[in-house]
Length: 390
Image (cartoon, rainbow, N blue to C red; front, side):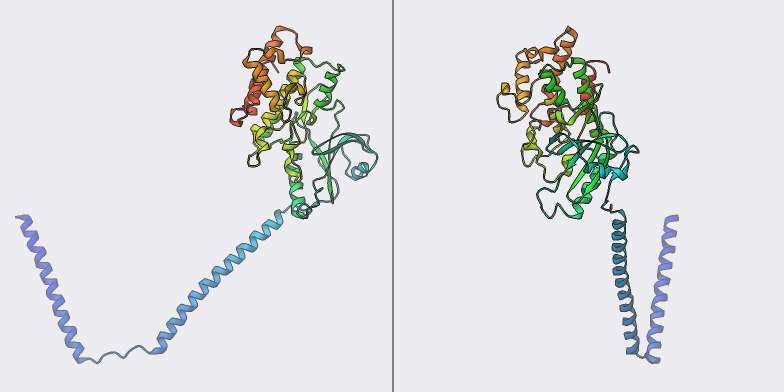
């Protein structure tokens, strides 16, 4: 009963509203017949409304264009402020090197220490008696107008600033550089012991004895330097030109990697065709050089430390790349004759021989043709340090 009552009430309300609407309609109809109709809106009122609308639309469009122009000006100004100027004169990162006398010292008679695909090394003495190693970098030899542009020189300068910021005990620190119109002079600490290439040449000529402990220390120091470049630097830095001539040794035979990242800033340099320590993928035009490419180069050097031989030794057959050394080591390992690969001058205690045989396995893995099969520098540090305590 309650629901029926509510329904009846609602129907009554709706009927009343409908009746009111009909009555209101009759009143409006009757009144419309009596009252005169309103005159139409004047024409000038419509034109005024159109002008106001067009003015608002034009103002919005003009404001949008002005905002875009302002944003472009601000962005251009910020870029100009952040753009590194092309520096002139010596840029020094060490308080021991006098900037005023550095450029004049480079012009004096210097002693040639060696040369590589990245330039020539010299030994020179500054006015304060400090002996430094100087690399003459000539990236503009091709004479291409693009290489002489300010943008190219500015890019090289920025890359040198990044290299100068590297700090690790197993890296050669860039102490200063001197930009000139057609070349750069890079200043490093002078290492009288020389490079790993010099040391191995003395070993082959029986002028120097390098024990397995020293050779393993050199290998571990090299990998720690690569680990710093690959995992501690942001963005990651690739060496790109790792070979014995770029591994300097101090008085304690602690290695320091030289020329880190220089190959990236030399536009005219074609490293893959110039080094027997380059990985096979770097000889393919469409391949990308990665940190695993540095690992391949390290594997060749580790093979040199173990065998005492050059990777280009005719003993290995095809010597176009360091891969021939890797294939030779792999064949010996598969045949169970890895001991035949070891340098006879360092064979001694049984424990050291076991460590060297394990190092042969590590070298073979580093020399894998597929980059994905090679370990990272981070993994190599653990693998090599487990062979001995450091």
